[in-house]
Length: 460
Image: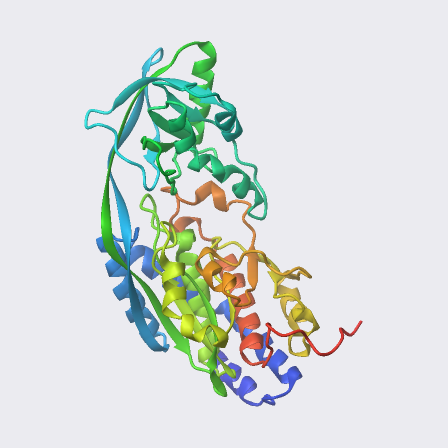
């Protein structure tokens, strides 16, 4: 009965009126809070597929899952777009203190790391408290040593804490330049569990490639305490493999526009994940949120004027999906009116950032009022970043928007074995869907050109 009343209500709305648009968007918002689509999609992905690194057999299963799921949910033009890329995988990994206090350590290889020799590496360590200390060290400072960087990450609601800390994960070449034989970094995490957090690293050209891994946060602190007492010697074993060429896929489906189907709003999340957990918050949640929001809009008796395209990008963690999408869709850039990605977990949206001058557009005036019940503020600032997979579109001139999520606990979990469905708050997941659905409907049912300056002045 609730579904019948919902559709009856929106069917009676005046199509071209801004007020009617706001009523429809409000109905979508409220329905999203009780809708189970996002949870069901996320449960299905994490249960039936699990971890899905790009280039793995699981990634191929994820592609097939995505195609079937989008079709079952009523999307049109569902298809996969293949692209070639290198892929990396891990094998046996362990680390242990040899002396003075023998004990095992919690460690995980960083994505892209080379292997140690088959029997591992044994060497003394040097512990540094920051990545800046690596850069400040003179030539040959780490000759024959395993460098350990124990740089804590600050907890923030936005991504600023992560942005400041994550540079340490890419310090392997700087350590190698100074003679290091391996590189260990404190997990880029705000948590204090022993689970180590992986993530990509890379190597500078013409620099020795040494193995690199992340330590569990307590173990990084443990090594610092040991080193304060005197010399510490470690053994480290990392095994990995690199496929120079493998295939990944971007999967997409559409809610076709009713009046201007050639004008497209591109949204989505990334389908790939790291391997320790099941990729629930990174980024199964983004897949589920954007899919569910678009599906709700697709169930309306009349679709909005523009097409909404959900893209499930196939290789965000190790790169390639955004550039592949840009290459495949260069011919339609002028018709992509806006783009955004959901890729910061499943906790609530607290802020909306729209393209510059968007708040001066009459069609978007209701946005602040629509999002207020969700406790979402509308920023006056344009987004600097709207997701790794839409960076290429943004640089090519496509306007972007961002629904910023509370990341206060996100970095306790991401890239670790704890990234599972168990950490997802179902009510906050629904709040995300509600914010996306309300915003998307207004954007898709308007004729706003975000590339053009508004012709009218803002009404005080």
